[in-house]
Length: 71
Image (tube, rainbow, N blue to C red; front, top):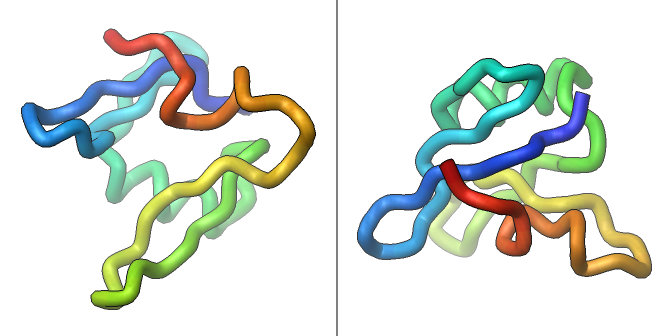
C-alpha cells in the first residue's frame, strides 16, 4: 500500500495520511511503515530524535510526501 494523500497542520507538518480510503495518524503510519505495511516510505529520525516518514529515494518527485494531494 502506498500513501495517496496527506493532511497538514497550520505549520505544514504532516499529521495524517490516507491510503485505501482509510486515514491514519502520522504516529500510526510510522508504526505501520516499520512493520512493512506501507510501501514507498521509510522511517527517519530528525536531529532532535523525533521519527518521521520519508519517501524512498527515486527519480520522481511526484511521489514525495510533500508533493501528494491533501485531504
